[in-house]
Image 1 (cartoon, helix red, strand yellow):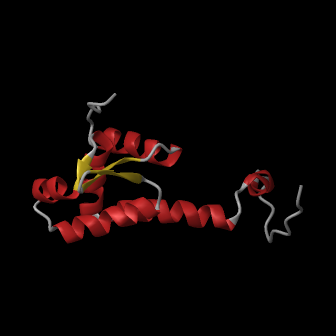
Image 2 (image 1 turned 90 degrees about the horizontal axis):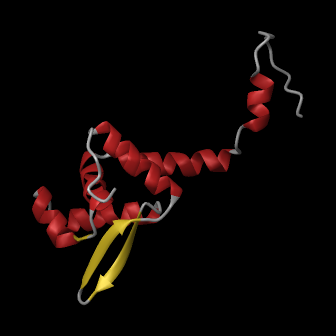
Length: 120
């Protein structure tokens, strides 16, 4: 247990909390994932991907966005390990990654929009 030289003693459990706190790299990774949710278009794309496997063309048409913009957002989501891609002929289909983070975000999206996932 590390002894923290804190300027005030409030008889709180801050030492216990600080001893269990993840390192700064873990917080940076989490911030990167949360940053993906800060764009409305990216959140709409992610909402679709949470509920079905889909290609860039269909997502772009459904959301009235350019294919280039949808592709850009999907690449950012892939880099954050929230979505995965799979080639099907000449198309690439995107779906939610099978990760704890992606599943938590899926559950959060469903809760925020008060829907029941068609896949569940």
